[in-house]
Length: 115
Length: 112
Image (cartoon, rainbow over all chains, first blue to last red; front, side, top):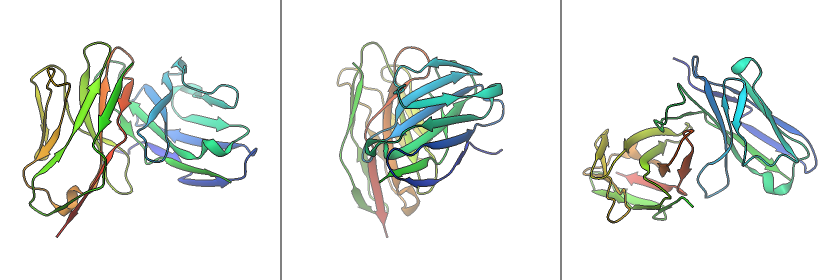
């Protein structure tokens, strides 16, 4: 069974440029999460989707970050414009159901460097 | 608020040594506790969990016991292998939505 797939794995951009990350969750997983992991820190939740609906986006900096999950499968996270402090690893995760099992399946992440 | 504190790494051990990685937490409510592991070049994956006090989670020779009185969930393994080299994250879950709160991670290096 394929795991969570993310792309690109690495991205280097200059500040003020836009960037987008893509995630394909495990087939059948209706819940999708985007996390941000700063260097030396643990992952922090940015947004959670139940199917197409963003049910928790309280930690998403909405002035420059946006996300979508059309058709309840793939998802895209966008930053526009990027700032130096956005350099981090962006992790996508999915889970089978909403129940609070705490078992999330993570992709390998997209490492963003903003120069 | 909710938070998790882990011992700083890297932790370097010889193969077959005993491993302990400390984890303590603060939580508003009664949390479930988790250890996630990230092997080089891979995504985080659940290693073990415990959902109530005195529960012991175990997997792949690793164990952790939910200690409510000391608000701790220390990870242990009796004999580590080189293949255990990874970053280990302690996490908690309180309330709905599978919203995990992670610690900062502890890197383990096991040498021959």
